[in-house]
Amino acid sequence: MVSKHEFRSKIFKALGHPSRILLVDALLEGERCVCELRDLVGADISTVSKHLSVLREAGVVGREKRGTNVYYMLRMECVKGFLHCVDRFNARRTEEYACVLCEGARSSKSEVRSHESEAEIGIFE
Image (tube, rainbow, N blue to C red; front, side, top):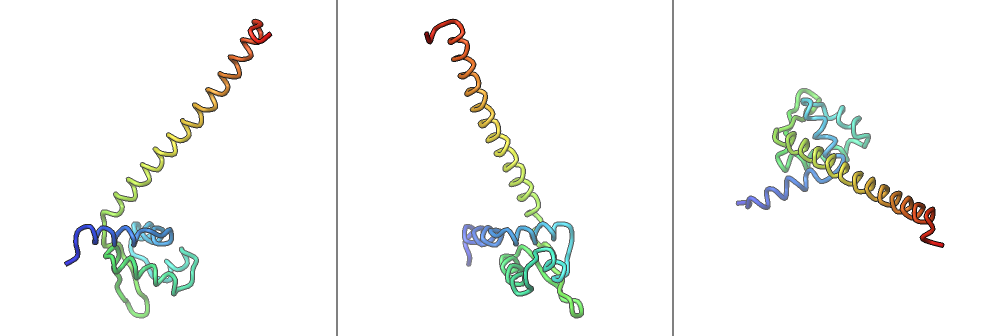
C-alpha cells in the first residue's frame, strides 16, 4: 500500500509542470476534448498525451472515450481550492516584495535628503 506521503508526492509531481497546470486550469472550466487541450498547450499530441497520462496516473484527471474523441475531466476537485490558495499566496508575496523595494527606495531618498539638509546648514563644510 502507498503511504500518505508517497501519494501526496505523486500528486505534487503531477502538478509540477507548467503545461500540466495549464491543462488543469482548462479542466477547471469543464471537460475538454484532447484536441482542444493540444491546441491550448501548443504542443504536439504525443507531448500533451504524456502530460495527461501523468495527471491521470496521479488521479488528478479522468478520461472518457466517445467515438473517435477522448475527453478529459478533472477528478480531483479540491485542486481548484489549492491553486486558488497558491495564487493568493503568490500575490501576497509579490506585494510584500514590492513593499520591501518601496521601503528601500524611500530610505535611500531620505538618506539623500538628510545629506542635502546637512550640507545646507554647513555640517559637511
